[in-house]
Structure formats: C-alpha cells, structure tokens
Image (cartoon, rainbow, N blue to C red):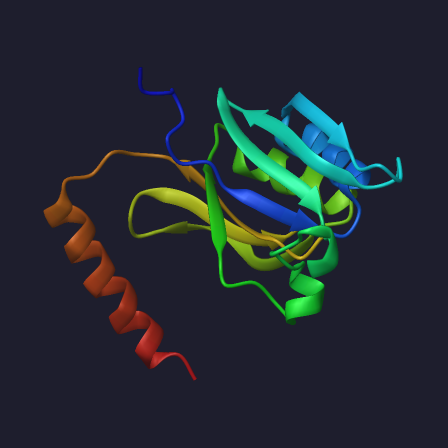
Amino acid sequence: MVPKDQFIPHLCVSDGLAALEFYKKVFDAAEGDLMMAADGKRVMHGEIIIDGHKCFFSDEFSQAEGGTVKTPQVLGGTCVRITLMVEDADALVQRAVAAGAKVLMPLQNLFWGARYGKIVDPFGHEWGINQQLQEQTPEQTQAAGEEYFKKEKKKP
C-alpha cells in the first residue's frame, strides 16, 4: 500500500512547541503526532497537517544525540522554500506577520495568474504563499512572463 503522502518535508526548528503553535495559528494546521525528547523540553518528532498533508518538525539535536539536521539560524539561512497554495493569501500573510513572520516579498499579482508573496517564519523557514486567481495555458503564462521580465529590466 502506498501512503497518501509520499513526500513529507521535515523542518528543524529552534523551539518545537512554539513552532507547533505558530503553524496551527497561521496555516490552520492540525496537530498530528507529537513525541517529546527525554528532557521533556524539545520536540523529537512532531507533525502538522495542512490541508490533509503532513509536514514533520523537530527541535535541533546534537550529533551525540543522533541529530543530523540544523536550524536555519545555525546554518545562516535556508536552502528550501515551501510553497502553499491558499484560498486567501492576504489573510494568511496578515496572520503570519501578526504571529511573528517577516515579509520577504510583498504579495502581488504575478504573471502566472496568482497572487504571490514570500514570508520567513520565526524559525527561519521560508514560505511561498500562492493564491491562484486564474487558470492559464502554458502559452499564456509564457507570454505574460516575457512581458513581466521586459518591464522588470526597464526598472531603475
């Protein structure tokens, strides 16, 4: 049997319980399994469920404790962006900012027919927020993209 989610991101965060509350509040995530470390303070394995799909998270652990992933703060940034397809991008970004996220790219209507922007959560993870406003053919998106980049080149 193939599981529903065959691709499950795993986020390493600096405060697992605070991250859980942030993701529940901002992304309307449901709480899945939660296993605390022996110290009772750090999340060893946590799950959030966003629109029926899992995302794992945990606190950072040392190599001696079996840890192999680091937080964006330790790494000096992240090399991953998770994009969420949402019904109301403006409302989500407002909730995120109120809960401590920072806007990296303000929401705007873009050439692929979506309202799109980027935020970074308080734990250093980058999220693309995409609200599809209209469906387009690949040809329409290509033409709109070419026009968009022509205008961008002309900006000072």
